[in-house]
Length: 291
Ligand SMILES: [Fe+2]
Ligand SMILES: [Fe+2]
Image: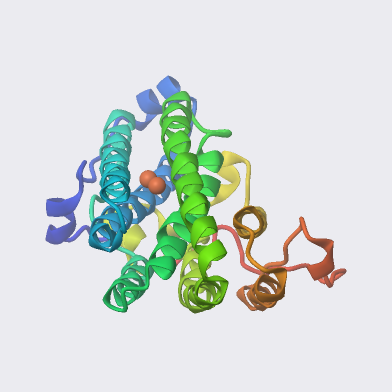
């Protein structure tokens, strides 16, 4: 693939030809592993950039000074995550994009901005603190398993922050649910149908342009390098989302149809047997399919 001039200018570590043999010896991983890491870490940085913007835009909507300060702190922590991930790519000698590339992030960002314009704080919290943080937790748990020690360490540090962010969101939304359950449930339904399809579409090794921008072997990317696959990740993500909805205490009469609608994303939950219709296997998305 061709590396564009734009890519050269925006990569934290511009694509180069590392001494792959020495790198493999140092980390015990092959080129496919580093291509996969470049892809995942770059896409993760995009999510972190979106989070910085979301939290920052949400600050004026927060009802108290303490809540504003807490939200600014969340934005700062997301900023640190960007720096930690970019530094990880540099240490392991692969190219990392430090800007939003895949369009789904911008779509979620736009939905968030629409919620801000409506002054719909429950929708903002649901999109960022619940939905995005839940997916971040699944991702960082995955990066903490069967990866190299540097990646596992960084993933563990960031995971602790994301778990805290989810807890903050659950606390905030619980309080709002007690005061005005109808409004908060309406916000959940609104956010779910706009944001969850975009988040789930990114649990994929298919990309719009990221592989090309990174100059990695698009067709060669596969999650087998970290002992998982797309179907497993999507089931983990769906189960985690269901756990989050339960944790907050949303009404099952509202959440069940939402979860059921996700079968159209090509995934069935494993945790809630009420929603399983198998023997039909849930997802036909192929790991390793790219661009
Ligand atoms: Fe983060
Ligand atoms: Fe976070």
